[in-house]
Image (cartoon, rainbow, N blue to C red; front, side, top):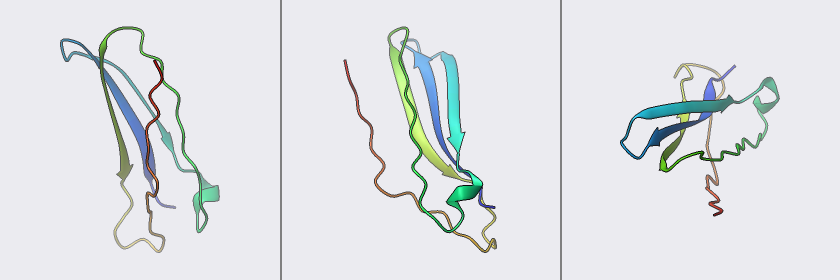
Length: 75
């Protein structure tokens, strides 16, 4: 099973780490499309770092692709 994630890290306005979270793909993503989405509300001013990660073994039978990555910001 591939190991892939949507990850977020939140830092305050002084660049000090506040919290983090993530969501891994599930077994249903094996040879199929799976949408990963995450909601986040900042409790203070700061910076949100968002990325996708693929920690799968290169020789694994299944590949992981990230398509249509986007962020919606609401104020």
